[in-house]
Every structure is written in C-alpha cells, then in structure tokens.
Length: 347
Image (tube, rainbow, N blue to C red; front, side, top):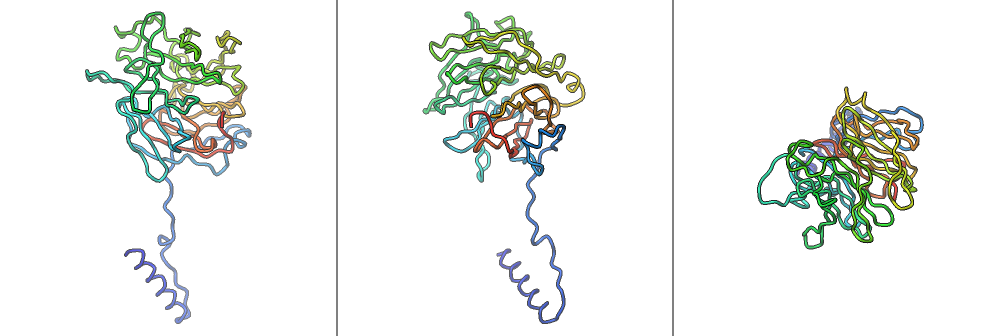
C-alpha cells in the first residue's frame, strides 16, 4: 500500500509539473537505495594488494550479536556458510537472503555438567567428501559430524593423554589432517589441573591408519594453520602477545616437519591493536590472509605485509566461500565478507 501511494504521488507531481511548466524537485530519499552496512576499513600498503582486492571493495557486515565467532567454512554442496560461536557451544549457518540459523548445538562440548569458558567448536573444516570436521574445545577432540547428527571421534589423545583443546586444522591432499592444540578450551589454560600434556603441540592424523604424530611442540600458543598451494610449507600462527608470530615449516616427503622459521613477526603491533595471530587461509597464488593485530593481514608468500582488512575488532579467522573469490571474516561479534579478484587455494 505504501509503495502504491508513493507511485501515485510521483506520477501526480510529474503531471502537475508538465502542465505548470515548472520543474519539480522530489525528495531524494524516494530514490535512495539502502546502504549495505560495512565493517571497518581497508588499508592498502603495497601495490600488489590492488591485484588481489578491487579498489572499490568493502567488507560487508552480514550478521552480528555473537559472543566470539570463529572457524568460517563454506559448504559447497549447500551453498551456505558455517561458523562457530565458541562460548555459546554452537555452530551457526548463514544463507544468502535468509540470514542466520542454528546449525548444530552442542557443537564442541557434549558433557552433561554445565561449564563456562570456551567449550564449543572452534575451527571448522570440510573433508574431501564434503563432511564437516570440528575442532572441539570442550570434548578435547577432532570429530566428524555424521549425516544423522552424531559425532565420530577422529582423534582425542596423544601418547595416552588427552589433547588440550584442538583449535584449528587443515587437510593435506592425501587426506592427512594437521591441527593445533593450544589450551584455550581449558578454564585455567596452561595451569588447568585437567591439562594432561606438558606442552601445546601441532599434530598430524594419518588418513591411512588414524595414527597421531606430534610434529612440533616449540610454539607457545599454536593456533591457525594452513598449507601453501604446493603443500611444501605449513604455516602456523602463534597467538602469544609476547611472541605474536607466524612460523613457516618445510613439509618433508613423509609429512613430518623440518625446522621452522619466523615468517612474520607482529609482536609490536599486538601491543597497540586488537587481536593476535589466529586463523588464516591461503589463496591460489600463495598469499596469506591471516587474522592478527588490527584485522585480517594480507601477506605475500615472501612475508611482505601488503594490506589489512582493518575490522576494528579482535578478528579470529577467515574462510573462502562462493566460487572462491569471496572471503568471509569472523570478527568477535560480527560476520563479514569481502569480494576479491583472487581465489582461495583449492577453488
């Protein structure tokens, strides 16, 4: 009814203008399109950034109101985004035109005794069959979500001891699963009496027999993890404000790791900006899109900082979606996306 009335008024004004020989100025609000809310700003540092990000790009704000959003992953079969809210123990689903709905609750802690902290799922990863794999804080395991809604444990211990709280993971092309195991799901972190391992490790689960291999325990708070496109390098984020770095490890032929090197160090930025090295993804050209102080930092394969999606919030993670040229971002209470001219590795 409102639109019909507006249409009538416009038509009537136009007719009167013709007969009166006058120019009628109509309210611009009648023709203004609703602006898409945006998240932060885009900071361009190096010319190479413009080859990846259109000059008119903006980070669209898709949804908000979450406690701590994490682990965005695109479901290619269903054409929707999944992401964790770690404190709420929930995986949410975002669909274009429909918005947000609950996909799975509980997502990371299935115990009967209520608990606080960060019990839910964190990193979400699709396996080669399109099944959802979850890094579960509360249940302290890597699990796969089955079609009937149940969880199947992929790995939950090393050397007879329970993991701390698996955080994020990445599949190698041969099906092996690499993941990080910091203590963020334990209420007392490193001092929690329930912590059974004396370190925070990076592991591999073999696709052949499910064997768990400790790859390194040298990082204080290993977090985000990703492979280079040729799988010769494994990147691991360290979310420690005293050593806010990413390390690059050479991947040996047997899948274990060689000696790591510091790929980038943002310890000085961590002192003044929100966020720490956390989740990350790699594009088809080998550039890193890594959450860190200030937002999502884009770095070349050589470690040069090209630019930042400065969200203004502590930013946890990002993930490719759609045809691979859209980057979805989880930034504290927000979900955002930005459309790029590059594509994610694997698309």
